Image (cartoon, rainbow, N blue to C red):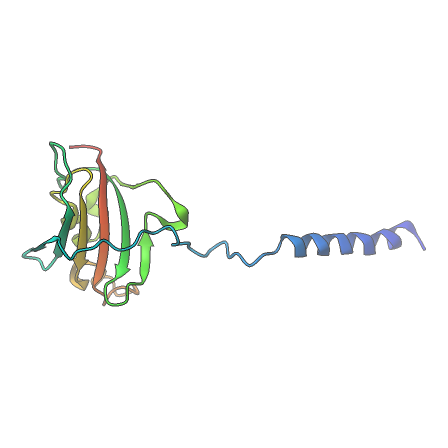
Length: 161
């Protein structure tokens, strides 16, 4: 038996062993929402309904001299849920993230989220109830196009004012 014929089975066994050891049940594409906080309690919050159909609840007012304006860049913590089911579809806390999400332009956000941020002060918390026409209703390819959305939002910082 030649050297190459003896070494091949050993190498094959080694590669298979390493492959089995390195395998686990974690899906690298699975999103982890385990660090998402519980939904904000709105039982004692001020309810506001806008002319466009957005409903928001002021959970905490926030403080500071400045309020979010349409031109501002902001950093926020948020969690988006389907209002009827509570299913989380997006969150700044995904995959155990502890940093706020930066939005350099409010113009790139869905209309209801943008409108809900306007007027907030740093540290403020709101719950936004966004009907489909202010959410993804104008995106027929979105799986959320027919859903009313709930966003729990905390404004961390106004970057420009």
